[in-house]
Length: 54
Ligand SMILES: [Zn+2]
Image 1 (cartoon, protein in one colour):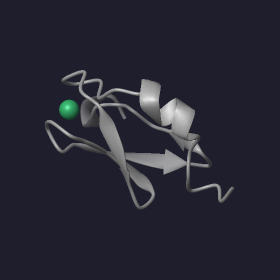
Image 2 (cartoon, helix red, strand yellow; image 1 turned 135 degrees about the vertical axis):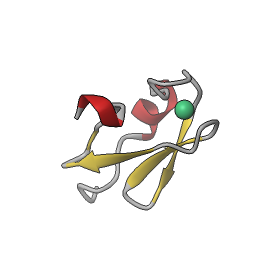
Image 3 (spheres, rainbow, N blue to C red; image 1 turned 180 degrees about the horizontal axis):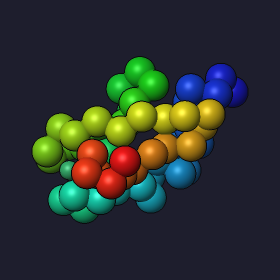
Image 4 (tube, rainbow, N blue to C red; image 1 turned 180 degrees about the vertical axis):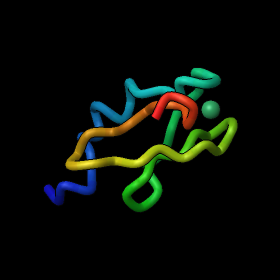
């Protein structure tokens, strides 16, 4: 598995930390289906942090 992708099982349980909605994989990022916020995936680990906390 390329390191830019994540486990589909993990993707299912992930949710946007801002609005708690599902996120979907777009390229090497996760995008919230609700607020469209984008979260990077680094070394297979999704970084689901609001911008303010980075
Ligand atoms: Zn969201």
